[in-house]
Length: 421
Image 1 (tube, rainbow, N blue to C red):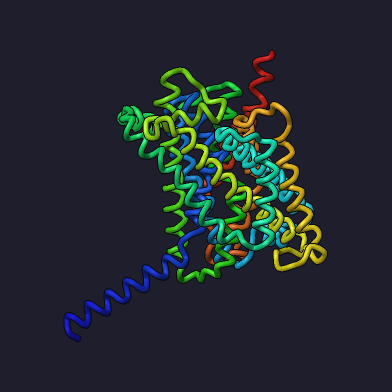
Image 2: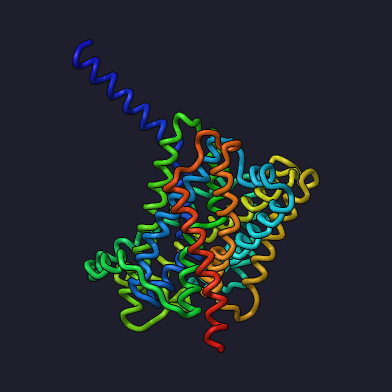
């Protein structure tokens, strides 16, 4: 074999590997990037503007936690070819499944409400009343998804979501104290008041989400990833979680520099938009609202659908857009109910939009341990996973994360009682 032939052979093999990786790549990056949706942006803006850089260490910790949890979900999807709800029903029975699906429904409903709150906040920054924008958005989301046009619209919404990258650019324009940022990122801190604990839970709940676990496993299972190629999916999960949380950290940094430094805690979308003024100037509100609207519409399209799929899968009801409404009444009825209820909550007069967005993520974290415990039990069951069960280090870290969330949740309810005494 000549040198030229050898070079062509190796180049061709490298291109084939790259193309194969690109066909698998996706669920990890999409799931992690979805952390920076409307409630995610609200949560990180609130954390940065209220507590400065002190939440950066928590982002480092939850990045590791997200990699561990999402990798478990992806591995279960690859090994079993089944979704989370299906495995929970087979392994734990109807009662446990009912409880788990109720927790998933509550968490996802709260997050869907937050997405419509994001739509309302973005519309008001554009000068459009929420009472016009929210009903129109609900109808648009339902029409696009049920007509099967979502895959075409998704590309447009993903482009709008790229505005989150503007926080990265803004941070370098602002030239924050990088030494202090690095120190805070590796120095854990904690405060024993309810507002702080809620903010911690919101940061955890917007990064490691119940819907993200379900979506990740279903995506990998649907792709039909073979175990011999699973290393590419693992790389996707690790890269996605890291990148998504790097952007999240820059949101915290920007709001800390522009708002926390001036004693301004974010309570409205208009205040949050000020973090982008160093980059966009007077157009900051429009850049912020564009990203908020794109992220909200994207998640509002995916979340209700993924919720109904999981619940119908758990109980064996007909599901899927290839069925007519009379063939899958529970599927379509539940989907419509989630959309309608979420929109109606946001239309309650004078309801605060920004607090809704980040408080919904606290609910996510409170309900998260239920799904984490079931996922861990499944990931360690040799009857389900064969030789692909968790290792000792992964188990120690995952159980540690679960116990930590439980302890923080307990502190949220115990501390007020202690203070009252």
